[in-house]
Length: 276
Image (cartoon, rainbow, N blue to C red; front, top):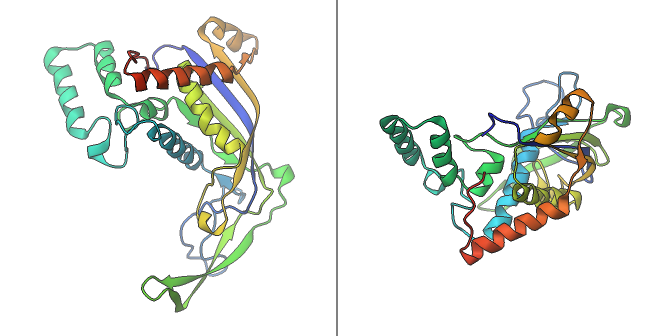
């Protein structure tokens, strides 16, 4: 899948918190400080793990695809073995077939690819490496003033729907208006996969998605501003490596049309593509 360079999409921008956000680091055992602090880097500044951003993005893309079809060959449920596009038993069978029939790596990968759903082909799975890398989003320290906020909470008894006596706690949040650097790379993706990706990114641009905990309390709203999106294909790899050529501007409209076309063919039953 990645033994040969085909293309790279390089995305850079800014994620800004529109409300306070809370990406938690677990319960603190410190004598002084919040009961539930946010994640910090080695210097004590807040950051958003790339895995958190990517997880929200993947879930949203999955929801888009499920509005068209529930077929697990298109969008599976990676958290349930029986609903994965390739179950553990199927994976073992595939490996046994490879060993018994002396398949070469190319044939094995082709078989694996044919069974992998659209989402796993882009975002990865236990057996298939992700084409999308989202770096950790570090705070822009020249625009951050070292401030955190404390919020109070109380445990609720689910049966009586009343506050539990003596169960007050506080949790830490990063304030609204805090900017973070965004950087993502997509390697060897097809046009339709890039179109599918942009539908997810556009939801972040519109501020439609939340990240972190306590979103039901109004926390977690962020917006993404893409400052640059450069695409390099294999014909320009030497310029990219030797001449600091950043590549061409992203062709989002064409990629979205490619994704729409793939969806239409799938619904019509005429989709014969096997690319991944």
